[in-house]
Length: 342
Image (cartoon, rainbow, N blue to C red; front, side, top):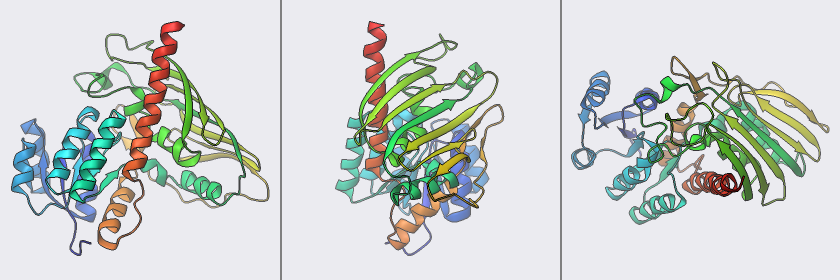
């Protein structure tokens, strides 16, 4: 275990990295940052008075006091960059999604085991107060057997969001479920369980020539525990985000977590039980022209530090990060087959 303050580095100095740097500054030590765009690296390095790099290998070789590297690069580079850091002897905190394929996730896990280091997967929506409360109720059997679940993800991502960005490309982004809604898929796995089968149809209605994949999808799921589920998702909600909600229908109760980002308990009817006095959650990530998921990265970093300094339980392990990718790939594989036959 590490006794001193944890030293962090960041690879990828884009939008989400600003959030990481802020929490590292508050909770640990930021010692180095890296981005292939010199302006981005220099700007963050100057802001936090640390060394800036444009080459990952140079940073890993030159900064031996690093304990953890936060991977904030495009989705399609997560595996390559994580494995480099693990092989260099550093723990890794990887932004979502962990990778774009189950094979890449497996290679990351193997690299971590070989180097005896940890991979921390970021799933910050697990810390939303109503989500945590419902998870606790499920684990305690308060809801009884779960029959079905409905996930709704209705957001807006306009053309400006994708302009001059890696977002929207098949190789670096991967798909709408990877970049926009992987946190929601993780919560299905965390709350309900593993997915046995997925049936999906997808379409690109308003982003032709802008993104390489779907902007809308409808999904039917069968879980390993025989519960049934549906996912309806789109980034075509007119002008602004509308909703991110999860409704659970179970033997002893019905509950809906809603709001735009699964941040509000909207409905409950439970036998002999009531959720009361839930704490207020953090605000959502605000990026000016659009708003993202709940900003619980502070809790993620608190957990990373607690694990490394005190041997506490990890909030999201690499296997769970892999399972999210596996479920998304099942959905996309089904959509590819069914879209061809429809």
